[in-house]
Length: 452
Image (cartoon, rainbow, N blue to C red):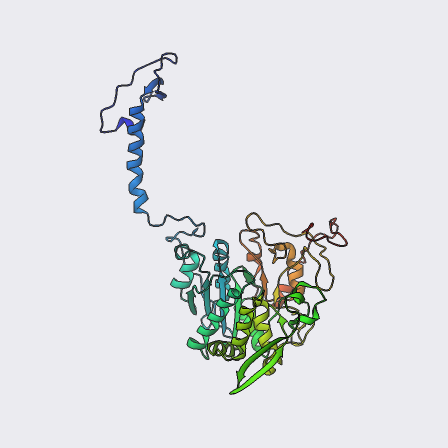
């Protein structure tokens, strides 16, 4: 009414009318002047049309003048309120991190992760999946952290559309290795690749001291769910008919050039994790070998692609390292559940929950109720599953340096707990665990796929 009363166009004079005498195609409204008595008015279709046009004219300037209209929910930050977080002091170890993100959730969750692992002497590389729209990334807080905040070296690139179970999952890691070899030679002591929904349990200072004083000689290629602890699992260590053994039933014949000589041998396949902690010489070996089509890693890649091998993100790096005489010696020969000699409390670098809806290769059945994420964040039945405060005891017991999968959208309290300034602070956390008296509905022998 306020708009129509001030319209520059001549409008029909409103007339008082009763409910029974209302003409067809007219509308009733209430008109009230300050201190007056409300009276019923009739608005004709022409009057309503003018009102709608007036509203559109008022709204159009604000719509077209705004350059921040977005369809993505990742942009929840106000540019006027954004401030770069403080940069922590450097540690004894120079880390080079690769952080991979692929959707709105991981773009948001990567912000506290980058803040936790950044330092003046650290390198942080961010890979944004090519399927994620670049304009969404540009409007996110992650973009501001990477491009506007000064704390060490940060860089972003999009090189791969990562599809689960395919070779494309390896491309971001190989890109980061190549970039580190080309631009950061001698500027990092450890390479660590992480998913954006990961959180360190120790801050940069404590993490740097641990690697400098205790873990300096190791390359680590497994996570908590590994059947053989810190040592990658050979295909023939899985039971017969287990899906991973069925995927690689026998050693793979590989021909390549090494030291100028042609080599042909049958290579055993090892299963590890796509998330690793590697020394610079291993990073350099992979980067240079992938530029040489006659090298062992390049030949193995060609075989994996030509034979359409699955889960190569779990097998490629572990198989290359375990078939390299020198590198194999740097992998801890520590079985599942045991700690490293230099840090007995450390039984796994990463704590994850996997395959809890099916028995493990050794026949262990799931026995705990867990978080159920909101739609559409529910993970696949085989995991990894989201973690929360009820997993705190398990995280402590594992001694893990990183935890995944975490999310601000699922359980923000973990971000208030980690990272800590040292192992003693982690030990001081309460032993919060899942209640032991819950009745678990787990069958003795799951019936797949009916009970999947």
